[in-house]
Length: 227
Ligand SMILES: *Cc1c(COP(=O)(O)O)cnc(C)c1O
Image (cartoon, rainbow, N blue to C red):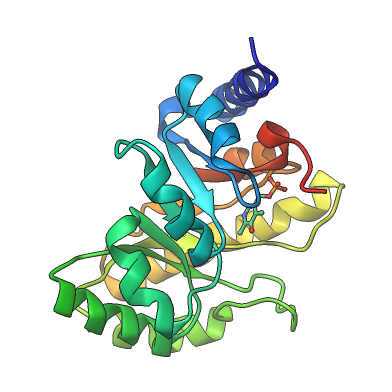
């Protein structure tokens, strides 16, 4: 068994255990293998171990890797998106995780219209109000939700966050709770379901699952460090 296969199996088992602990089904949690900076040969090993969903944080890497791998793979853009890259990346991805302003949402909507696409998107929330991070503040998203729902090409499927890094799970947990509660509030306000909660990375995905994550974005626990 390759190292990546071993790592993937270990992560899958931990996902399954965390789901079971919280009375959920493991199948309700999608594992995104975050393959940023890793070459296609490494991704191919993950594919051989049954992994089909990959997360990349840079458009450029998706453009590079997408044509080199099987078309059955599903790509998620998990990093920020600039207007001038929307047209290229939109046809290649299953979901855009980090819509962080009304302006970029409008650009995605307009270009999706031109391309005849209906992209699935998540709204990025800056849960800890960090000046270094992207995303809507909870107040901003409450104010702008209606304007986002007017963008009729977008399937807004939920929310995502990148909480401050902390090795103490009891410090990270409140951010995941916060995101879930905000999601519940937005569902009430907007009158539409927001089923996806994209939260949890290598060091905290189990806590995220306990708090309701439906998509976890796991890189280093599968592929090793990024040097
Ligand atoms: C890199 C990255 C991850 C994965 O981080 P790991 O700690 O390696 O699991 C998850 N989400 C986003 C947005 C990232 O950029």
